[in-house]
Length: 327
Image (cartoon, rainbow, N blue to C red; front, side):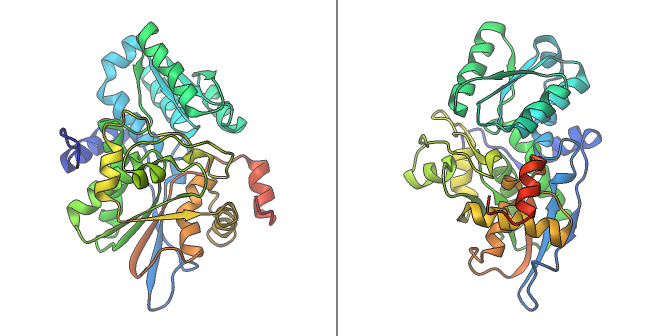
């Protein structure tokens, strides 16, 4: 069941108007290396081209622009595996607001450093996102900062949904969109746009084999806790919250298929994107391509879009992967 206060296509268009001057309209490029003659015609939606290197800038900017006076007066806090924190720091700096980003010890150093470079305060708390979430909630209670949720917020979901609007404008006859699945903000927003245009269009969620909280929650029929483990797809880690209000039900209602990919398959996709498409993608950003390369998406045909959701990868790790290491 979709939440009682549904997010509508109108919300997505309002978000686009609000954030248009503040983000990049990212390219949709054909991928001959992933396309098969007579079958699927694959294109890549390159959110790696955003100023902060990932799609998260859309949702964070929509929240901060919509709540401008409150944000400037109180400052903002968020919990992040890296990309959302960087987006919040970037958007907050542009309006002159204080930003605090709570993170676990599993977040890579390159992502922490990028957030600090934008002037945000970082709090490293515990070994999982739940610990970081507790610290963010404490700051909301005690310092009255405004919480910019990484995914479970209508303004954030609507901002991410502008990716779907752009896909439809560039490829109105899209049949399948393949999207990374973490907390569900991106795939929910894209699916809202896609299903409004064509209810028969397919939305495929892809995530890593271990620590996939939304996938396990959908299987269980309720939000569940999972153990977080190190992964190339570190940006897809973290729980979805036992009090999840929006994305859990949206994902259940709008996502058609789920695919799990291994660490080796993620590494292969990162190499493929670099060698064949000249795209630098982080592990979480490459999982859509990993699913196609591994032939794990059933019945793939027609016009297919793989969302490459981010490129903020540690370059030492990336160099090792491109050179042929399994992880």
